[in-house]
Length: 280
Image (cartoon, rainbow, N blue to C red; front, top):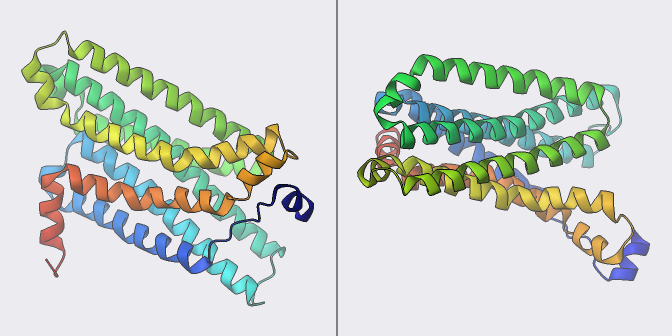
């Protein structure tokens, strides 16, 4: 690492652990607030908010896992924990499983919201018959089960390189699928009744903003992984890899940004927050 830095003059950027810890705690509180708000307000008991609540739940898991990881790093730096002990390794596997589960859950939640918005725009008259709360609950149960089991299986039986390749491929595939669905959706919208589309496209715009934030926050991290595999010794690539902690910080910030988007786009959710928070 020192040789690479001398060649590129790009010292590794270090983000203080308290910054990671602060973002983790605040994002944990925000996403928990979203989950409680959706459960609390019956007006939010709809398929779209159900899937958004699922997304907030997966973000909560990611925030909790990263917060625990930062706490463990503090104890390890203080000499209170062994970084390669058996119990520490098992705990690290649990944290990795939670992070994998969170990423898989975010991807599947975005896909579910995209399908929900597609039905609401192009099958508006049959929407409530197609997207029932029973089907929504079943879909959420399947998503959470698949993500939980898959995460444990991946971390337990596959090495780090395979996991990274798998997540990069999954990220790219889902990005292409959702982008295609949105281009297709907006192209067809021109041929549908303007009134129906304008009434039901609000959720689609919200999903667009959410998915855009997801891509912006996660893409630098996955680009880092691709660069590690493609050009591990190139000086210019080494310069980009020196920003790894910044990429992780951006990745964590995604869980902090999503609740702000929910509140900005939903007047009902803002009203629920005001009723729930004593300081309001």
